Amino acid sequence: MKAYLLRHVQTLFGACGRLAAQPIASVMTMGVIAIAIALPLTLYVLLQNAQSAAAGWSAAFEISVYLDKAATGARAEAIAATLRGREDVVAVRVISPAAALAEFREYSGLGAALDALPVNPLPTTLIVTPSVAASTTQRLAALHSAIAALPDVAGVELDTEWVERLLAILALLRRVVLVTGGLLGAGVILIVGNTIRLDILNRRAEIEVVKLVGGSDGFARRPFLYTGLFYGIGGGIAAIGLVGLATAFIATPVARVASLYGSHFEFAGLEWSSAAQVLLLAGALGWAGSWIAASQHIRGINPS
Amino acid sequence: MIRFHEVHKRYPTGREALNNVSFTVERGELAFLTGPSGAGKSSILRLIALIDRPSRGQVFVHDQNTAAIKARAIPQFRRQIGIVFQDHKLLHDRSIADNVALPLIIAGIARREIDKRVRAALDQVGLLGREKSRPLELSTGEQQRVGIARAVVAKPPLLIADEPTGNLDPALALEIMRLFKRFNDVGVTVVIATHDLHLVDEFRARRIVLGAGRVALEADGLPSRLP
Image (cartoon, rainbow over all chains, first blue to last red; front, side, top):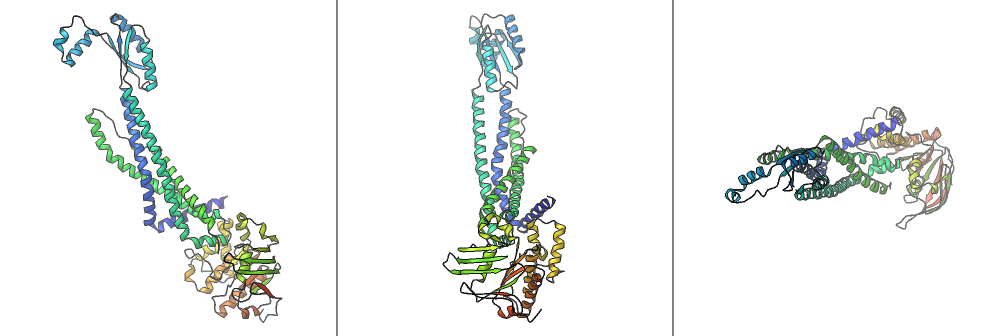
């Protein structure tokens, strides 16, 4: 067992050495892999940021509750107290008809016209702020119907349409990331497979000798698998570097846009855990590509 | 050890390389396959090493019918045979020691044991001290001796060689043949294909003379002029 592991380590260093012996070719292969991985990865980072920004927006959302004209100020306070007791509500603000009219007068610019009204047409209004946890589409809808079912409530207004649209677009983008990721992942397998295929053809004589002295296909394949693994991991590291550069490049203008909108939104780069997953996946793709090519071509090389 | 029974070999090109060949080489024997080029010497060695399969007839190696050996079992089978080639087939990007060690690495021998056995094999062929050299730094005769060291390092019971002296001058060729004889003296079955009849005359050994794909003559060892 120890000898077996040792032999693997030797093969690993051997593969490493052969890559280092042809630095330009190796770096170019890794560069192509890096770009193929960096593209969907950058999209993924953008999407993650869009989602965290969208989460911020839906949390800031408010529900307007209009009471019956007959409801008194005391009744309004009672309803507000009930709503404040709910765990999916963080705050309730009561706006009396008089205050609402004053606000309307101030913002609408219809001062004189409003003075002409015989009575105040505005109802008592409650502004309900849902908790962040309750800011999903389903929970907002549940809260909406719960409030609508309360006595003395004439109407509830919740404009979730734009949130739903935004979430739908983000879900669509998520699919786009998956599709491009899948396609380019397959591309990485093909790139590594083709590189390994050429490598195998160049070392045909060596494989023949290995087979003549009793080496199995698996033995002959092993160094190529490590080479593929290195291509994948090297490409993965370079891809993470590229995404790091891209996020650094984007972060400043994003912060500027956010500050113009009065937000403290900060553009987040790739997390360490995601980076580790990318490396793992890139290594696996490299391994898979070399496995396919090596299994296929080494079987066909026989001593002559 | 080796038995050919009515073996025919026809290559896809249509060439009839072997035509009803039967012979036996006993365990511990030294046998020369001789005959002109194209007589079928190489074809016989290729059938022994399972590089090719017979078109008809049976080939037994180590008392085993090779027809029963599946492709997956060939590597294991070849580890029981040391093969020496006319063109050495050394890996030029690796040291002499690494070349000789290859069969042991494949067999999964521990590193320390490998070093010991590689040095022993190089000592047997008179190349101790050249472990770090590359094959191309050695003369042709020396490269052939590296090939022999690689063939015997895993101590296979059977050693086959295809024109091992083809590129060597007579003195070197005799030296290489004596090396094979020494392995035969310690019990290894040795089969050598060669067209050099003068060289064969130097040894007391079985001779299987081929002509046009047939066994033309089988002769037991002549008294050798050299020990």
